[in-house]
Image (cartoon, rainbow, N blue to C red; front, top):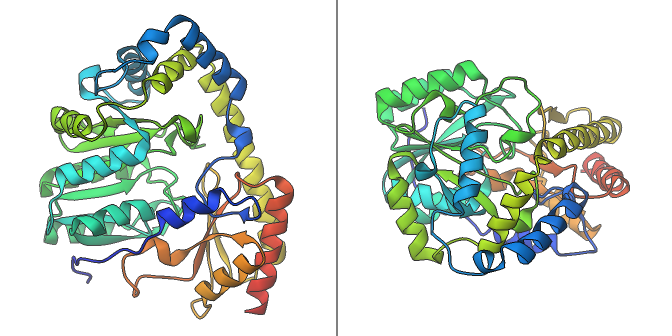
Length: 387
């Protein structure tokens, strides 16, 4: 049985984000939606109206908690998804990353046991590694996410201070924890004194009916919640949301010390966009587009990748997780692909130890054009067949 341990992360997020700006790459690596997924005309209208009618408000200093009217709108939206909260329990953040980073540092201290998925989002792992916590990796077994039976055993033994979990369309695996396990997980964590930090940045892209956030099964005393609109509206807006729960004031203070407040212009313009009621129409478009891109990628992978490749089929989103034979040298495949101007995220970036790592790829089906997606996957298929 695994025991908690400290680890030293490598620089990962910086390299991936720098690749985004390389026009010569077929980029299957970065976890960004396509530029065609951004509602540009609606946002242009919202920004123009903001500067015409709310310029003084949008270009001045603001409260650290974020635009009040935007928080009211989001409280109402969250309530429709089963989350009971209030404007005083919500802080608008600079993307989901600030919310994740801030909550992990607020709850966990060096030496604390912090559980996470394996595989897990590399930026989360970087934060945990830099903080000096003892990580407790929980294996993601299949499309339903973590091995809950093992989770119960490990939590009762080690009683982690925090469990960081991407509950819906987890990055990178695409796994989604079922409602019944979400409820049981909250009950387990109440008994073990474990705080849950739910990252639901991909939640609105799910195609599973009646899926509730983990936070819907709690009042905020056990579950803190973070998300953003980077995957559904525009990454460049950097509009994130944090429901800190018991730590609302402490989180707001920490944020104020970091950056005073997030970009007021983006908050007010996003609020005006949200008030149009077009967000749900846009989500329908995104789910349809993502499904079409995933199905295209799956067809090419089935045609070109080795038959030993195992593709996880997520119920939404634009990322695919592909497991490859254990003897395959994935880092060599990665380097060879770069020489042919194709980038992907290899599995090592999503684990905290060499023993856990498996040869795998995280592939973005949305960011490249359809032609580049097909071309890139075919190049990878040839490399894999050769290696």
